Amino acid sequence: MVDVTNFVKQKKNDNKGRPRITLIRLFSFLGLLFLLFLLFGSAVGGRMGLVHQLALESLGPVQILFTRAGSSLVALKDDYVALWDVREENKRLLKIIDKNDKDLGEYREAYRLNRYLESELAFKKASDFPLVTARLVGKDPSFWFQTLVVDQGRADGVVVGMVARTSQGVAGQVIQVSKNYSKILLANAPSSAIDAIIQKNRVRGILKGAGEKGYKLHYVLKNSEVAVGDWVVTAGVGGMFSSGVPLGTVSAVRSQSRGMFLEVDVEPAVDFERLEFLFINLGERQKIDEELIPQERRGE
Image 1 (cartoon, rainbow, N blue to C red):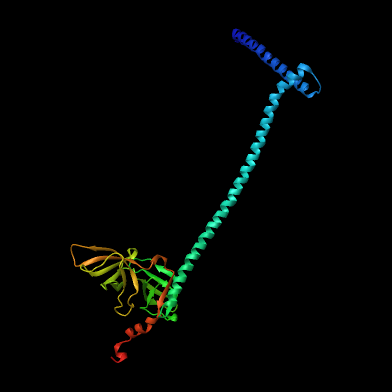
Image 2 (image 1 turned 180 degrees about the vertical axis):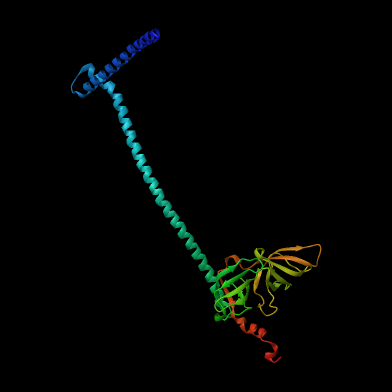
């Protein structure tokens, strides 16, 4: 059964809200009509007295508001277009900068290589013994036997035992040769050993490779005068290395409480990480061949 009391109350509440809605609609209609009247009064020329003045006073601020809004929209559009253009210009400039950086890196590398080749060529021209220029084509990274492979071999006059060097000093020694390639044991390899002397006072020792740490000069007596910065050169003993070829400079000297020898560290004269070209001394060919010929064939 329907609850009549609640239905009557709900109808009364609905009737109370309707007059408010009607008044709001009426005032809105009158306001719109007044606004149209003002617009008509502003559009018609001539004098309209008070109505015309009211129209001007009422619509002036509205027109100012719309004018400012329109100007703001135009400015916003212009700023957006300008910002878009700036972004495109930035992209274009970044591409130019990247290209210039790449070109600059190539020019620097070409300049460095040119200076390097100039110094090596000057050394080759000034040398009083025949040299063959060999380009590095491979490298063995193993610690004990650090070797390089170069593009000169037996067909170019290279034999085992020849010394490889740069304009700075000794780089290594040829240990294996094929027709067109040679393998060179680097002087800083731990398996390498060279007779050496301190240039200033002729103190002798054996220079052994220490890999990335450079060299260690062994068997230098404690009473020897050795200081940081002293040049270490080849002693020329054994005939393989001519005397006086730079090996490096003393970088540290330590004296232990035990033992009779100093611990001497040597900084290599050659930068083994930047080797690109080597000179192999072909003038040692006759000397090496004589050492390899058995004594009975020489009538001794």
